[in-house]
Amino acid sequence: CSSDLPIFGGRRWTALSTASLLIPCIWMSVAVQNPETPYSVFVIIALLCGFGGGNFSSSMSNISFFFPKARQGTALGLNAGLGNLGVSVMQFLVPLAVVGGLFGSFGGEPQVLEDGTRLWLQNAGLIWVPFISVVAIAAWFGMNDIADARASVRDQAVIFKRKHNWLMCWLYIGTFGSFIGFSAGFAMLSKTQFPDINPLQFAFLGPLVGALSRTLGGMLADKFGGARITLWNYALMAAFVFVVIAFLPGESGEGNFWGFLTAFILLFFFAGIGNGSTFCMIPAIFRGEWNARLQRGQVTEEQATRNANIESAAVIGFSAAIGAFGGFFIPKAFGTSLAMTGSAEAALYLFIAYYLSCIAVTWWWYARRGAERPC
Image (cartoon, rainbow, N blue to C red; front, top):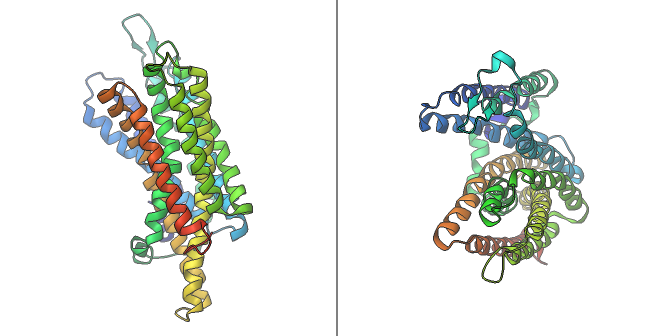
């Protein structure tokens, strides 16, 4: 969806893609009230919710055109950090919303469980309807289409030939993928490893910390360089996965939930830092690419500036979408590890290996002396 921004304009695309989220929210509120609703319907609803991810990607591409290079890390980190607060808000708000009839007769009848508990599961979708409506209207009347940022699909599709697009996708899966994946899998992992703990009381804390730290990551990257912050950040993420493993129950004991929770919250914190710093790297990388062509006399200064802006915006949007696959792979890795070994350790060691590969990529191409694209 990020490629649609330079075609339709940031204002129109943001407003329309935001408004489209009303469809899955309302449809889900109807579907959950009928116990005979087939699974395929919920799959379609989930696919329609994917427009939310596309909306996020387009917003990151959109905002990259507004700010000078010295402030892009902070601006992108702030935009993404506030956007990612939705994960924490959802995990905190939805459990509260489904226990009461917030919308009266309009919201429908409650679902009654075997123990007599009444739940309004439809509120999980309806609670977002007023917010989506207000934001869509605000985007339509308050945003700018940025006419200077117009580019065709062909202009943007060139990023699929750019090595640094795929390298940054790899790095961003490690940061945003970790954030969204841990957000999806933390509660399940907590419940399986510490059955006496109610994970819903703590599930929102990690995403909250990760979303807030994203802005800090952008600010640090603006000041010290995106590659340097990203490099050390991955080292710390790998270290705290080892800490998580140390507090898991196993042959040596029953584990320690509070140590496990603290280590995981720090993992969320550094995932947020890395989210901000990797996005700061992308504009710098593509400015360097096109400045090199400018120095070789292959393009004019105007062409170099325009192409660098278009490609960096497209890569920001595309990598943001690719990073969301972490929301599938991390819970799947936890589930597979638990099913095969009875422990989450295998999945966690896999994450450590991934973070080590990200350290190698960051150091070789972006952080070492003489790197191809220092940033």
